[in-house]
Length: 221
Figure 1: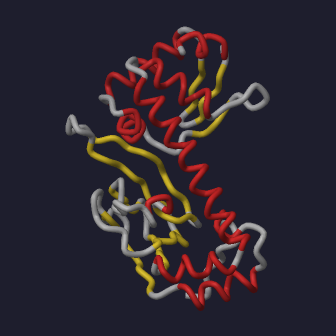
Figure 2 (figure 1 turned 120 degrees about the vertical axis):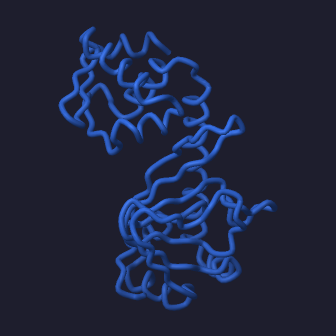
C-alpha cells in the first residue's frame, strides 16, 4: 500500500512525502484492484469508505429521471471518489463508477479520515478545497445539461476547454462517450460537430479540436 505516489492528489498538496506515506500507513484499511470495464460502485450505494484512486482512470455516469444515461466525468489518478458526499446525511454515491483500465483504490474509513483532518489543518483545508471545486464543476455541469440545443452544449464544452491564449485541446472521449456526456444521441452530435467544422467555427483533426471563431461559439450561449 505504501508504494503509491499520492503527491499529485489535491488532498495532499503542501504536505511532505514523508507525511503522505505516514498518512497511508495510518489511514488505509484495505486496497482494491479492479479490472478494466468493471463497476467499482453503483449510484445509490452507501459510502462506507473514502475511495482514493491511486492508479488508473475511471468514468462516472448516472441514470437521469427520464432513464437516459448521462456521463459526468473522467477521473484520473490520484483522486478521491465523491468526497463531498462522505459525511452527508444521505451519504450515497451519486454516480456509477466504471474502470477504463485496471485501477487501484485505497480505502479509508470516514471516522479515521475525520480524526486525521481534525489534527492537521492543511489536510482539512485541502479537503474543503476539493469539495468546493467539485461544487463549481457540478454547477457547470448543470449549466451544460440545462442548455437544450446540442450546438449550445458543444459550444459551452469547447469554450470551457480553451482560452484566448490556448485555442485548442485534445478530446479524452470518443464520439460515443462525448454523446453520453452531453446526454444526446451520437448521430445528432456528429452532425452538429460537422456543421461547426463546415462553417469554419472549429477544426477537428482526429481528437484535436481547434477554435477558429470564438465569438461564434459565444454567440450560441
